[in-house]
Image (tube, rainbow, N blue to C red):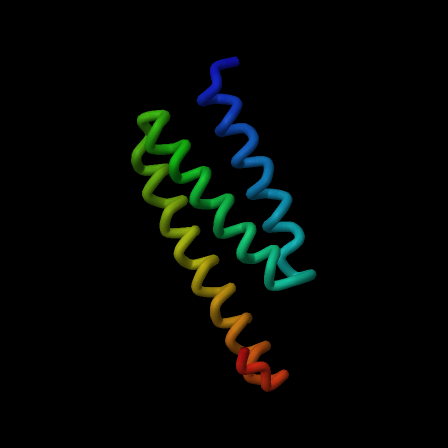
Length: 81
């Protein structure tokens, strides 16, 4: 197995795990976003740019979801740190 393939397997595995855990904490959503970025990088490195583009869009959507959840939590708790 090449290092690139191993990187892809690890990135996709972490992405699935973090996706499954998203409902438990907003931090899993952030981890999902980072793992989507990893799979995007893998897609571009592997020469499958459509996969890389779609995964990058997923990364941005997950990051936006995390930000909205984080902002809502901060507004509810009144934390202004």
